[in-house]
Amino acid sequence: MNPTKADRTNLKTFTDLPNVGKAAADDLRLLGYEKPEEITGSDPVIMYEMLCAITGVRQDPCVMDVFWSVTDFLGGQPAQSWWNYTERRKDHLKKMMSLR
Image 1 (cartoon, rainbow, N blue to C red):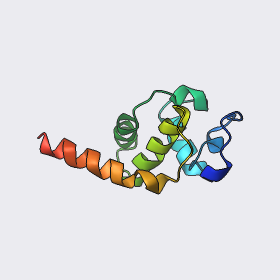
Image 2 (tube, one colour):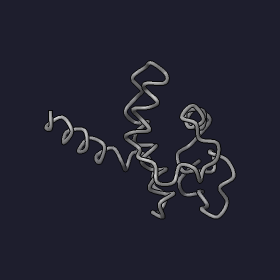
Image 3 (cartoon, one colour):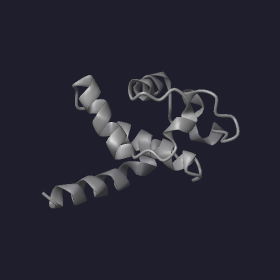
Image 4 (cartoon, one colour):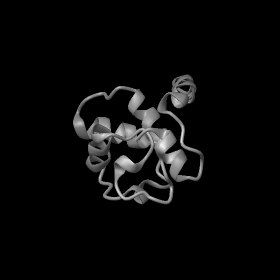
C-alpha cells in the first residue's frame, strides 16, 4: 500500500501495511506471520535473513527496507516510503561488516 494511504486503525491484511503489495505479503506469510499485528516488535534484519534462508535465495536488499518500514509503522512511527530506509540499511550493514 502507498504509505500515504496506510491507516493504523484499519490493518486487516498485510497489504494494508505501508509498502506491502502482493509479493511482500507472500514473503510475510512465508515467514510465518498470519496477521499484520503479529509483526509488531519483529527485527527487520532477522526477518530479511530468515526470508533468504527459507527461499534459498539472497533477496533484493530493498526487501529489508520494506520490512523496516513495516516494523517502524507497527511500532508507532509515521508511514514512510521504503526508500527512506535505504540509508539506514546501508549504515547497518556497513557497521555489521566492520565487526567481522
